[in-house]
Length: 69
Image (cartoon, rainbow, N blue to C red; front, side, top):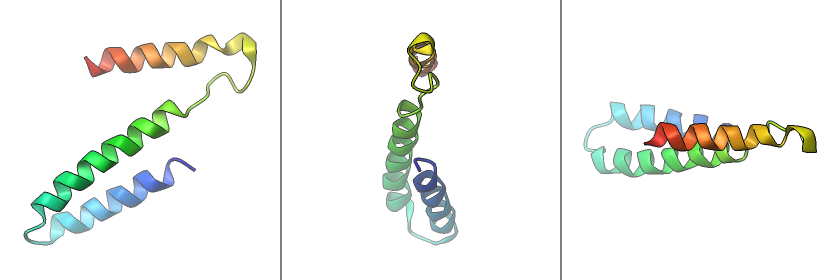
């Protein structure tokens, strides 16, 4: 459900790259695409609803923060 908007935005970016004078639209679309990717990553639940595996979500968050810096 969260992946489909990313593919749509990527397709739109591909179309805009081929058109002339769309630099500002591509920059705006890039920020929207980065937000959609961040949103999709934050919605992942690796614990599958089980309390015993809740630490997996924390590990994902720490890795994501460390990669950002």
